[in-house]
Length: 99
Image (cartoon, rainbow, N blue to C red; front, top):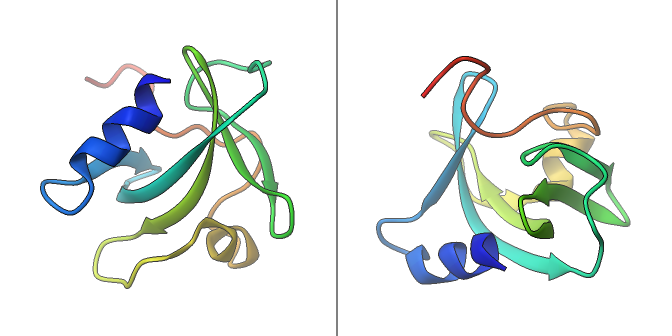
């Protein structure tokens, strides 16, 4: 899966990033998931503190494991769910109509 490989390749420096609303979200670690996405790429299809945060991709699904918001320390993706910053149905990536 392309997203999983890209995050692994860019770990450390320069890093892999996506948009979460207006914030730039650094993605430290993802895992491939054996599930076909039932949503558009970038859509959070599961956001559960115990079962993980799964995001639809063009060629499958990945689980966000560790992420980092600007000016914050890296945390488990489930911490963003618990803090109300990330939820099912949200869309990661460039805003609609953006580049």
